Amino acid sequence: MSKVKEKKKKNYLVIVLVVLLLALAIGYAAFSATLTVNGTAKGEASWSVIYTNAKLVDVNNVVDNSHGNQPIISEDGLSVTVNVKLGYPGDAVKLQTTIANIGSLPAKLTGYNITGWTANDEEDLEITEATASIGEIIKPNGVCNSEFIIKWKKDSTAKTIDKTFTITYTYEQNTDEVNMNATHTDA
Image (cartoon, rainbow, N blue to C red; front, side, top):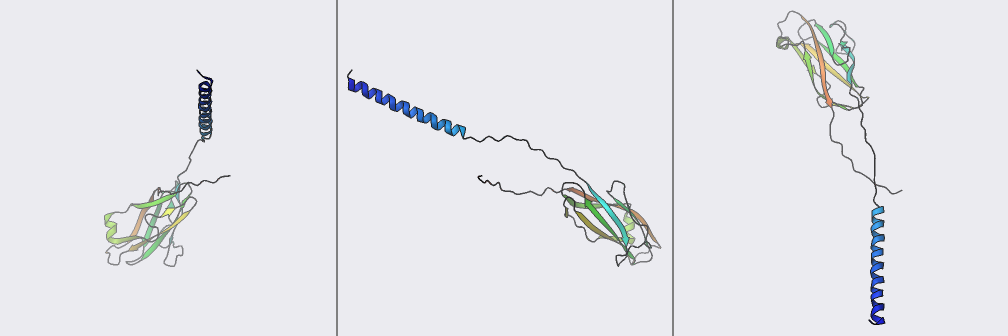
């Protein structure tokens, strides 16, 4: 072999080695630029929606003991029991309550239940939820004021109205979807 051919072969070998070295350098740089994120996510929450206040008031929103005993909030705060005494057909009284969300999760009002109330009562009495509404959301540390009007129907044939019943609101965790966009800033 001639010296020229041998020199050409060495030059090709050097060029191949340089290209391989550059490829290795670029591959290493790309591999070492990979960002690795390690971490742990933990969620804790508490649920507590309770009545904190309840009272019977007259049409002027003044506490009214002539229309029955003042309401009693259950020991666990989940219900209110009220005794209503109305004087004549057309007479009415309001039950005002305050409900507090002392938990860390938002609560959505889904309805209410009245126990101690029968179909016969509906012939003589009318109960109207006046302020709290289905779907209302109470944020953590928030309150909701509600009001019920209890009225002796004008066309009732009852001789007296002396009724005790219990009201319990039903709530569920507010699970409305939260929409967020991730952002990035370079330091």
